[in-house]
Each structure stands twice: as C-alpha cells, then as structure tokens.
Length: 173
Ligand SMILES: CC(C)(COP(=O)(O)OP(=O)(O)OC[C@H]1O[C@@H](n2cnc3c(N)ncnc32)[C@H](O)[C@@H]1OP(=O)(O)O)[C@@H](O)C(=O)NCCC(=O)NCCS
Image 1: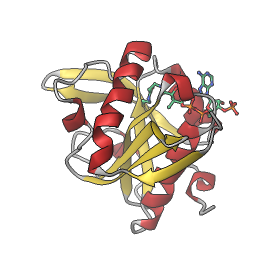
Image 2: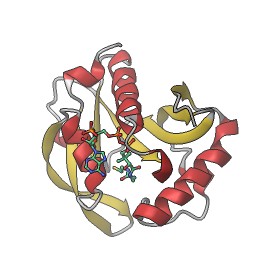
Image 3: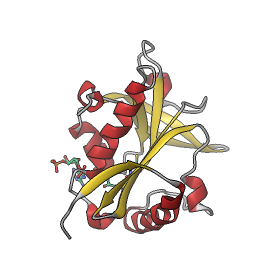
C-alpha cells in the first residue's frame, strides 16, 4: 500500500463501497449507534449540499457530508448568529486507514465548502463517547459551542457536544 490519499466529490457509484466501510466502522466503533436498515439510504441525507469520499490507493477509505441545517439540529442554534451554518455529518474513516489525516482532510473539505457557500460556517455535533472524533475536532482547532441534546428520532434525545469550524479549517489550500 503506497498510502496515496485523494478526496473527491462522492458519486452514486461510490455508495456501495461507502456502506461497506461504514459496516466496518460500526463493528469497530459502534458508529452509527443505530445500524440503519438501508445504509446507502442513510448516506443520502435530505438537504445534503455535498458529500465527499477519501480514496486510499484508489479504494474508498473515508466519507463526509455537508447539509443544510434542519430545525431539529442543535449545533446551528448554539453557533454565533453572524454567519449562516451548514452541518457536517456522516464522517467516518475505515479502521484500517486511520491515523493518516484522512479524517482531518475530510473535515477541512467540508468546512471549506461551507465557507464557499455564501460564507457559511460548518458546525457539527458529536456524542462524547466518540473520543477519536472529539480529539479530531479539538486538534483541528474547532470551537466548542456547548453541550446540548440532539433528537435522533421521535422521543430519542442524546447528549452531544457541538463544535464550529476554525478559521484554519476554512482556508483554501
Ligand atoms: C474520528 C475519525 C473520523 C478520525 O479519523 P482519522 O483519519 O483516523 O483521523 P486523523 O488521522 O485525521 O486524525 C487527526 C487528529 O485527530 C486526533 N485523533 C484522531 N484519532 C484519535 C484517537 N483515536 N485518539 C486520540 N486522538 C485522535 C489526533 O490529534 C490526530 O492528529 P495527530 O495524530 O497528528 O495528533 C475515525 O476515528 C472514525 O471514523 N471514528 C468512528 C466514526 C466517528 O466517530 N465519526 C464521527 C462522528 S461525529
């Protein structure tokens, strides 16, 4: 494995491979907590404005998505009101491909794309048990907006930590 990583806009033809990687992530880390009946459908989010994959030596090794805020999203409500927001989600990296800055690059890509879309700031929420993700956001200098409760389904509220993109994440490389 040469370790060559590229980040590309996701294509529908990537979805099956993304779902396969997601399965490995779920088995390793319990993300997502509730395994979806239709994993490819779970990756096609209503209100998505962009989705990207990272390929490691040509194989999908990571994924991220950016979506318009929904009324139930807690992070946009905690963000300073000066800028519109976009919500980062569905971020994961194959267990075998970790520690190569793939997660960091996907996060930067989403933050840059949000900034390009009318100056929006990327925001996200994370459950505290996803310790690698929390470490990634703090390492990337994202701003902690506060703790809140995010609705995952009817009557299902979970405690989350919310973050907003750092100026560095938004810089065009
Ligand atoms: C979170 C996740 C995407 C990170 O992917 P990754 O490609 O391994 O992360 P990176 O290599 O880009 O890490 C960047 C920085 O984050 C921090 N970090 C990442 N994983 C870490 C871990 N397990 N422990 C401590 N710090 C970690 C490190 O500071 C790292 O930089 P450094 O090694 O130079 O110090 C991956 O662990 C994952 O898919 N987890 C399960 C799914 C998940 O929790 N998704 C987020 C839901 S909100």
